[in-house]
Length: 426
Image 1 (cartoon, rainbow, N blue to C red):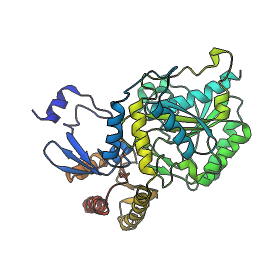
Image 2: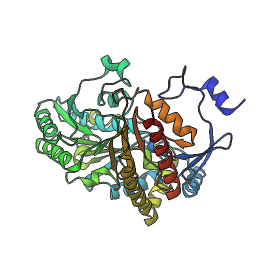
Image 3: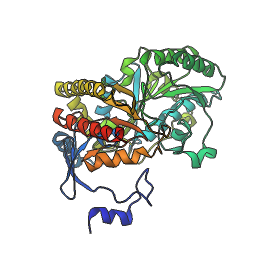
Image 4: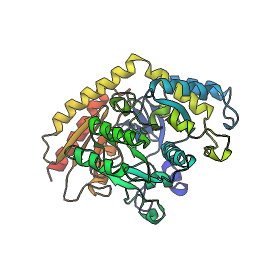
């Protein structure tokens, strides 16, 4: 029995209709931007395995550091205890995060990093004796699948079974091109409410919402309005952090810096699960008290896991190498050339790029949505040609590992152009 067949008898996969999906591809090893299945077939990972892998699969340096940590300390309770990898990682993160960030709180994935940020902001007001409980969020946002993160996200098919259980939020338009002033005006009205608690946003790029991109200037103005009103701002950098937008964080493009920043995905280079939420000294000070009821009662069994922290530290080491940033710049340049190639296709709309992320819509009779039937056809077309992608409905995108070679990227582009030729011929 193959690994795929064994999987089909025991595993329930995420975001998957198990009755119709068929057996998954069984991956047995990885190297660089490539993955290999149980039959020896070679795939180019064009989406960094759900946007997490930055330096390449099975990176020997990260593996070496993880192995060394496993021989020293695999885990220890993080309440009342600490360890070197967690302390060093926090110190190094605060050096590369915006200068207003003061503390690091560890969790274990993107959704929980967001949950931490939301709870920080909400309890900040509670500790001050003010009943401010209304979050301000952007339309088409996605912040994760835990209940707070779902509440802050768009109400769509992902969350429909839970709508009645989610808390209400105030929604404002994202400041996309042509709607900047409208979005800013909506935000100004929202922060004027006497129950406004915090403004959470995905800076410059709304990922799962359809790779929606917008400029730094209007977001800067929105953060500035919040600051004038004393309303904390939360940047969900789970996707945009660690070089994806061409800088370490998307917040690096902003003059006004967020009060809270949520991180995960590329934090460990894609090696293992780890989340982190940073905050300003003002937010942290809001929890200091002789009254223990003002403590931040939040945690995870694997908070600050030493092995995960060691992986993150190794990843940061690699970001200190000029080669990494040279590769990031190279991907940006190649993406721009690719965009110029595909704009001529009649079915391509809204070709766009930020940093190492490129996206475009492939139009058909259906509206753009996650359930657009073109999605499965495009996915199967590419995977059948050994290119790993995962379209968001009819939105196609690429988020490659930074180690991808020019030849590998050109192979990906060629397959996508062949796909577009096939679509255009019908």
